[in-house]
Image (cartoon, rainbow, N blue to C red; front, top):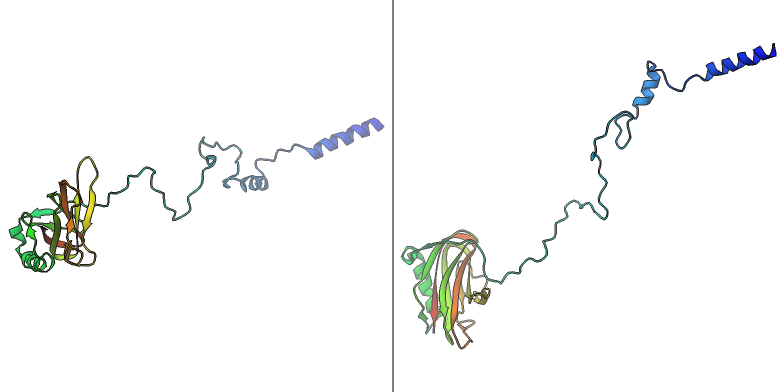
Length: 222
C-alpha cells in the first residue's frame, strides 16, 4: 500500500513538471519569443547572419569627427612663388588700342628716361588667367614693366628668371592694390637692376587676379 502511494506521487510530480518546451500554439509563448526578434545587436535564434554583416573597427582606427578635414598628403612640392593660372588668350597689340593711352600715361610718369624693350603684348583674360611674355634679362640692365587693363579690377605683374633646369624665381613684382593698372619697378621704388654679371632667359607674367577683360603690357629698359 505504501509502495503504490509512492509510485502515484512520483507520477504526479512528473506530470506537474512536464516539458520545458512551450506549446507552439500558445500565443503567450510566441509573444515572449518575438519580443527579441529584430532588435539591433541581438542574436535571433534560427536566423542566419551573413558573414561580414557586422565588422569590428580595425585596431587603432578612429572615426572622423563631423566637419573634420583630411590633411594634405606628405611630400607635396612647394610652389616657387611665380603666378600660376590657366593661359589667357593672346591678342595683337593693335586690338588692344583702347589700353594704349593708359600705357602711354603710365610710361611718362613711371619710366622716365627708359626705352621700350620690344613691342607691347596683350591678351583677353578671364579671372585668374595669366599671360607669359619671354624676355632676355641682360646683365647690368634695369627693367620696369607697366600694364593696363579694361574690365579687370586687379592686374598684377611679375618679372621671373627661368633658367632651366632651375625652377622659376620671382625677381620683382608690381605693387599690390593698383587696381586695373600695374607698375613693376616704377619711379617710386626704382627699376629692377640685374645684379648678375651675365644675362639669362626670363619672362614677364601678367595676371588678371580679379575680374575679366583685356590687358596690355610693355617692358622698359635702361
